[in-house]
Length: 216
Ligand code: E4P
Image 1 (cartoon, rainbow, N blue to C red):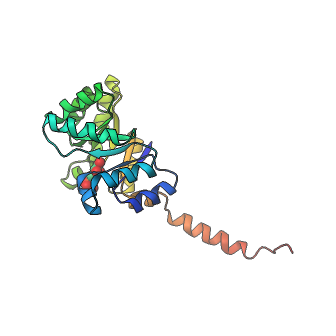
Image 2: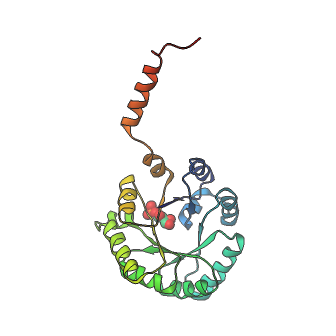
Image 3: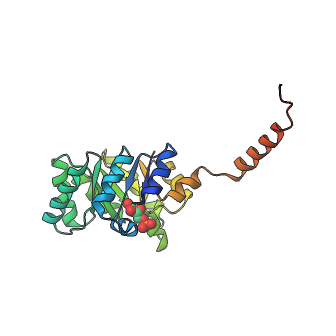
């Protein structure tokens, strides 16, 4: 399973990258807005830090606009993945990008039928938003299970990128269901490494080590 970090914050990206478990980055307009910086500056800096897929989202909503914007974003770096909203115009653009060898991440997916269409259009990644579904009392993980089943039934190569991850349980369940990628905030990536028994055990080992006679 691959781990992407879901942020446009350079300090967070550097921190996750230093952990040695980071495979890529996803951004969205809301995350970029939080930085207060120009999108292209942030994007170029991310590409210098992480050697893996970097999702950059278009803001056009018509086919021509999405294609024009996506082509420009793709020129920035070979690792750029053009993030496209799951709307009809977006699917049309994904088909075009696919024929041009431009990688895509189809975002704002909330149903398995949407995911089926994205795969048929040739999406590289599909991003089902599990946290936002949980927020409205739908089981986000049920959607991951449905997409996995459908993609396996037909041998679609589109990778399932679990998005809107809010906690380590989301990551655990996504991994058990065979999702390809989880994109997580830094806090969740850090939480994955933590266990109170690890801290207690380590403290005890270090305390006991103090009792071991030291060679002179
Ligand atoms: C995915 O690519 C999105 O950027 C992200 O996961 C959305 O998460 P949120 O629902 O916490 O905003």
